Length: 116
Length: 114
Image (cartoon, rainbow over all chains, first blue to last red; front, side):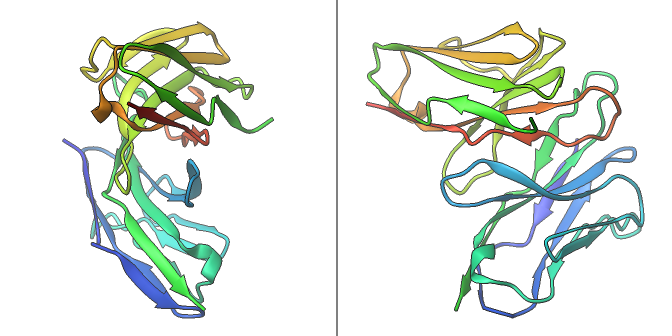
C-alpha cells in the first residue's frame, strides 16, 4: 500500500533560519505529492503540490521538488518567520482512477516552532 | 467562492444526544470527504462521497451517519457518541475533473463528547 514518512519533530528554529522537513514516500504508479499546513485552531491549507517527477512546487517562500529516483518530496524555506509556526503534513494521492477517489495518504506531521 | 465552510465551529454533546455537523462548498466539486483528526495527528479518512453517492466508508461505527443531500452539502449525523470520539472533524472537497487535484479543507468542527 501507499505510505508517507516525515522526519520526526518537533522542529524548533530561530527566525530567519533555514528550514528542511524531510518527506519520503512509497506508492505504486505515479502519485501526486502535497504539502499541507495546519495553523493552530484551523483546518488544513494546501501549501504546495507537484504532480510529476522533477516538478517543483512553490508558495510563500516554501519549495519542494518531486524526486522519483529517491521517492522524496522535502520541504524547504530559506528564511522562516514566527508566523510559519504550524504543523506541516506531507501527503500523496494516487489519483482518482478506479476506487481511490483521490484518497490522501498523510505523513505523521511535523510541528514547527519558530522563535523571534 | 473558493472555500469550504463548516458549522458549528465548536460542539459539546452528551453521550445520549443527537447532533449534526454541516459542510458546504460552492466550487462545483463532486467529491466530498469527512475526516476525524486527533491533536497533533494526521487526519483519518471516514467517508467519501462522489457525485452524491457514498463511495468509501472506512469501517466507521454506525453512530456516525453521513448524508449528502445535494452536490454542495455534506452532513454528518452523530448519535450515542463516546468520549473517545472527541476530536476535530474536517470536511474536504475536490473536483473530479482530472486525476491529480488537491483536496480543499474546511476549518473543522471541534467536538467534545461528555
